[in-house]
Length: 161
Image 1 (spheres, rainbow, N blue to C red):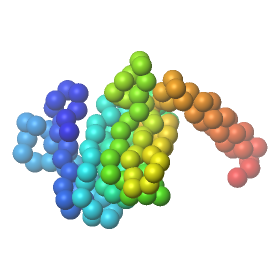
Image 2 (cartoon, rainbow, N blue to C red):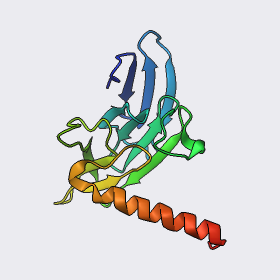
Image 3 (spheres, helix red, strand yellow):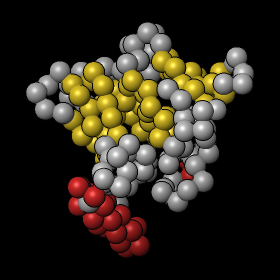
């Protein structure tokens, strides 16, 4: 997979490794290892968040390929290149994934909704607010996320855990 600029390329291996390259160099900038060592079936750049999504049959790993300078997340620990944002694990065996978009963003370049095809009859869906926004067709996710953040802030101010 290539990023939008065409400068970065990511390639997954049968041994569960994803290498990120600057096409002007023969040495990888970063090498990410999936924990199960299973073949990588899908790799995708998410330019809006500066992340790469890579999937094998047990998980989709979301990790930074460049420093996050946007204000999607205030979590400073996972804004550096090579840092893992999240590992998505489902109930079935993943065979592919996409980032869901809407009519204003059909490619899902600004979306945080990941849809995963599995060996189960239904697709599995995941929302990652630190990666992107909810598409218009599921905007209720933004409201739920805001309510949860407000609740967490209120708990923190009251000294509750």
